[in-house]
Image (cartoon, rainbow, N blue to C red; front, side, top):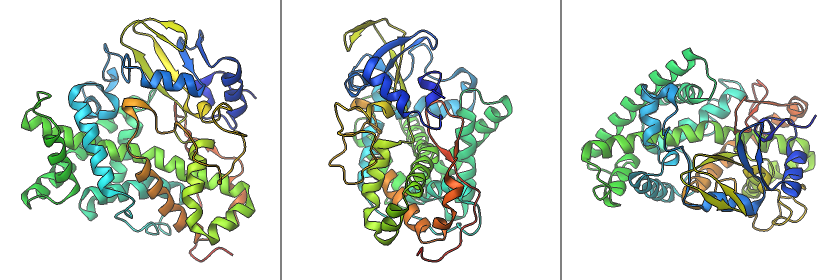
Amino acid sequence: MTPLHPVAAATHPDPYPFYAELVATRPFYRDASLGLWVASSARSVRAVLSSPVCLVRPRAEPVPPRVGALASGALFRQWARMNDGPFHAVVRRGLGALITRWGTARGGVDARRGLSECSLQEWVFRWPVHSVGALLGLAPGTLPEVAAWTGDLVKGLAPGAEEAVVLRGGLAAERLRVEVRSALEAQTARGGGGALAFLMTEVGASGASAAGVDAERLVDGVVANAIGLLVQTHDATAGLIGNTLRALMKEPSLLAEVAARPALLPQVLDEVLRYDPPVQNTRRYLAEDTVLDGHTLAAGECVLVVLAAANRDAQVHRAPHRFDIHREAPARLSFGWGAHVCPGEHLAKSLAAQALEALLATDVALHREAFADARFLPLLNGRVPLLPALRLAHGEVG
């Protein structure tokens, strides 16, 4: 069955023939049923994401109304990835510096931890958040709660969430803010050295005062964007791990090869990010009238940017629908383009590689059939599989 429209495609069992049709026949068009423009080709996606008049939120609605009065709304208002103000640009540079500082360092929590204590489905969400929390310098004993609060916050921000879920997300946001601020204060009191203190110094030195930010707002901004890293890690990294597992389970020879040679994992992840990325689309809102890819758009209109379709554009990739881990320099758009390109690519791939290396040293290969008909979380822009509720046993895969 063909997806009804590009938004429904994200969680369709196989949206890629539909995406290919969009790229070939409607690379940039207005979808009357959705009431927005759709960019699907690599050229049109780059045009939208690099345009200075295309904002990540509508000017009249910087925060989703349902969370505007909650702590989750206060965080959302400060996230660099969701805003276009001068201070947010400063924070983006600081986050980039922090992630560069981490480099490809192993996460702060052993990827094998917890595998025997919970199901695979639970673990792929918990462990990445634990690891980023440890990298940020949060107290080890708080990491299980931090992961749970992060999950509640993510669920509470989802469009269409029930009121109780939204309120629980607001409470989780407040608890995360207290925890992260406490860790920042502790790192600062010790004279710096921790990741949060580094981010504080970096953002301050990068021009926070020039952006009209006082000391208190600087602290709030650093705390909020550290929580933003946890939020981005929650679904996106779980989706990358899950989609990679699904790809490997479809190809027994590739699974065996990667299990025997974990050094291949970076290549596998690069191709999964192109072939079946966890983030399928994003949106941009027009701040003023403009022309994009030959079309005239009016201020206030919205563009759905279908990253996953652009990743399979035959104008960019040879044999785009073939899964090929030896593909040279995949020019994918999974982490965006332009001013809001996500700085977390290396962190996401490092976390996913550690997780997969741990998983491939279990008996996961014996459960290939359980991955055949995966469903996906009901997200508007994400492709995050609901993995089998397996309890994996340690031991090298043969």
